[in-house]
Amino acid sequence: MVKVSLIWLNYNSLGFMDIALKSIESVLNLDFDNYEVIIVDNASSDGSFEKIKEFIRDKKPSSVRVKFVRSDVNRGYAGGMNLGWEARDSEAKYVVFLNNDLILQPNSLRELVDYMEGDEKLAAANGLIYHGNSERIYTAGGYGTDHWIFGNICIGIFKYECPGVNKFHYVTFASGAYMIINTEIVRKVSPEGKPFIDETFLYLDDILLGLILWNRGYRAVYVPVKSGIHYASLTTGSSKTGLYYGKRATTIGINVMRTKLTYIRQLYIARRLVGYWLLSLINRRRREEYSMLLRAVRDGLKLSPIIERRVGILDLKKAPHVHVNTIDALLELLQIKKIGRVNHEMLKQPETQ
Image (tube, rainbow, N blue to C red; front, top):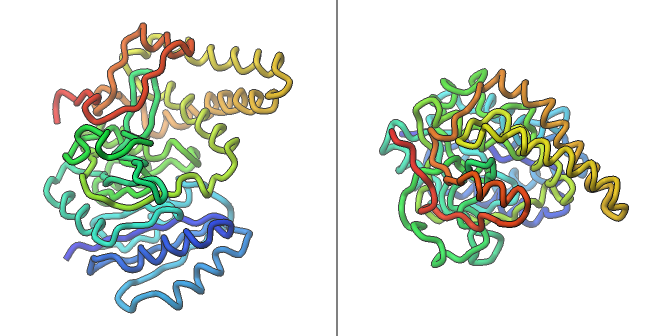
């Protein structure tokens, strides 16, 4: 029987404890016979970890094994999930990474495992995830573009507006909000045998993993299974946190990911460095925000060589991605044109699969 380890990551969730506890309850009551739950706490200081442990003691079914791992510092998504990875059952064929603001469908794990079992090249997957209590999609898989934009397929639209949502598709990467991975494949191809690069902290982790898998001959997929609902960004909270780590991640991506537009990547870096510097000087009202974004770009440039030494240069052409020509890329860089929402049918598939 297939064994699965689920890693549920917590950090200061007291402010949305009702959702966090619903998330844990959904994890403890999955329609699956052989799994363990690893609760990783990223050095929470708000008492949430203690409440979570108490809740699990009261609610845990006898058939579910639960482990607790507490970090001495906040290691972000990447480092926290790596701690859970190290604590996984040695016989677990699959590992699942879960956010603490995502509520799972009871049958989702069983159906995802069934899909993974059907192809030895499938290394990572996610199903259809909705946003909050709405009928709008949070993600139907992850995408990347030739001009280094990464995001969620069909985000913010209804299911009927998302072409191909009912079909199995290859994607650039599987969403880290609820991702299942093949343990042995990831252990074999990832740096130091771990799924994520600790230094990325936030927002680049699942993207890098997806591209590593495609560049090593494996696949990331979207599975047409309703998997859960995600109350996105409750842990990161401040929009400034998201802006900083998002811009830092994009900067690293430009430097470690080869695309058909790599020859103009320096223009993208210069646009950010010069643009945010000028805006921080002339826009007093938003000076703090632009200074933070400038710092994010500079920090991304400092981290890029470290990430490159770990993963090498990753070729986007080896993964499904959105084709963007030079003119459209430059127009978007100048904020004249936007790519808009991406659906599965916009993804250019690799030549060999």
